[in-house]
Structures are given as C-alpha cells and as structure tokens.
Image 1: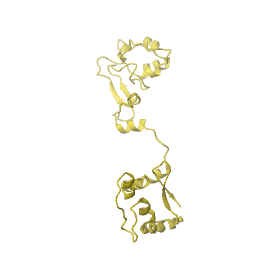
Image 2 (image 1 turned 120 degrees about the horizontal axis):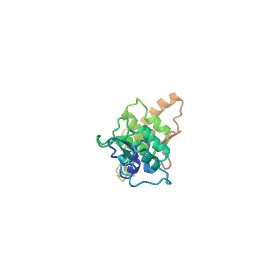
Image 3 (image 1 turned 45 degrees about the horizontal axis):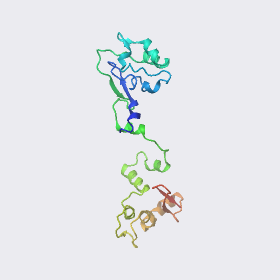
Image 4 (image 1 turned 90 degrees about the vertical axis):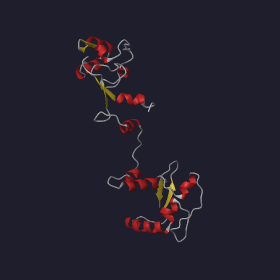
Length: 217
C-alpha cells in the first residue's frame, strides 16, 4: 500500500470548503497536484501552504494566481473552483475512481495493476452465464491446479498413487484423468466426433514457461 501511495493519492479529489487542502501537493483542482503540473521555470512559491492562502476577502486572489501559475491553470481555478470560505468545514476528500466518491481497494487495484491482453483461453473459460463453480473448475484444470497425485508430487508430497476407477489402474494424474482413461476417451469420442474433431492423438501438454495446458491433436 505504501509503494503505490504516490500514484494513488492523485486520485483523491479535495472539495474546497474552508481551503485547508495543501495548495501544491493535493489534488483540489481535479487536474492533479499543482506541484507536478507547474513548469519548472515558474518555480514553487513556498510561502503558500494551503488553498485559503490565495484568497482575498472571500474571493480568489487573481493577481497572485496568475503570478504563481500558468494561465491555463489559473483560468481553470477561477472558472471551475468555488473560492473557499472560513465559515465552511474542512475540505472533504473524494475518491475519483468511484462514482459515489468512496474509496475501494478494488478500484485502486484496477487502477494500479498492469493488464495483459485478454487471452482466448480465458475468454472461453469465464463465460457470462456459466455457473461459477464450473468456470472455476475449468480454470483449475487449465492452470494444472487440481489436487491430483501428480500435482502433489510436484509440490513435494510423494505417495503411492493409483486411479482405481479404471479396469487398468494408473497414476492419478491430469493426463490419465482427462485423456488416457477409458472414461475420458469415451467422453471425448462422444462429443468431439459430433464436432468433427479427431480424437486420436489427443493429449495434454504444458506450454513452455507457462503453467497452462494445451490440447493437441
């Protein structure tokens, strides 16, 4: 949370009430912190701390704003932001990534994380309307995360393994359960033959540098 603070805090919009927001370092204009928007040749007037420091008799100090800020920023403040009033309460924070203005971890995570391009396999797994338990099971198969004996062996648990549901028992593995067993082969043959897909040679292999699966014919 601390590592992403410098990025996330710019999504907090401070609604000016009394003008207690930090003039340079908090986003009270809706554009971001002025510290990062003002060109270097303007410099930073360190005598100005809070927003109310640039008001005069309840109105914006126009001359001071144009002196400290580029014209476009000064005009934005004069036209879009209501001058603070000493009778108001402290400035109120508003989370810009949610319509109701309340912070949520989900919106912060969606904003900070790097999204990969949608994968065709995942689009076929997470199908709208498909019961979640089925989609989740398909995802576990695709990622080889089912708690079968071959998976437990990879994480360090070695034990005798026999898949007793077949006439000729074999190791309880993803390959055997979904491809090599008689039940699996009968199921594939029944459904795939109607789709015009050959069953012979169908197997399951790990992709290089990926924990996913690939069906090959």
